[in-house]
Length: 244
Figure (tube, rainbow, N blue to C red):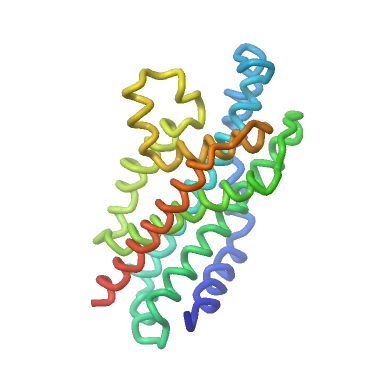
């Protein structure tokens, strides 16, 4: 793990230089969703005693954890293809595990920052949720899953342009189908089975249940942990191949 802190601090220094722009970018989409779907439709759609806004906010947290964590792949690609930073890492006495761990933690940090932005934006709308240990555990696992996937995909793509294709074909469909905007259990059984193969569905379930004070399903946390470890191993394997 020699060099892990250096990798992480480098990403944090870059984030610090772009912090205002990053925060603004993190706030735009959630604010639009809160206003258009949550505020405008919040009283028209209800799930039991709760408004649609209470259903939507945990889904936005899950989605932001995914998109912001996966966004670290873009920075890795820019550093790899344009700045040749990855070649410098290859020459430096930094192990592959340290590189993957540092980049993954950087992606998780960005995602947690995005979650914080959403929770602050929700305050004027009067949404009161429970932010206990199980809520933050689900958020961290969600961040870990997609930050690890981001590092893996950043090593597998052949050009920076290919990264946008991954976002279009993997992240965007998952953002809308992973139980963020609608309850998956209202769909036909075969559709539910397909959507439960998506890690974001389990993240949405865990985050929503814990934030609304409902009983949580341990299987959601277990699936996120196992998928995250699998993606982390894939990232490590991908870095090994990229170095070769």
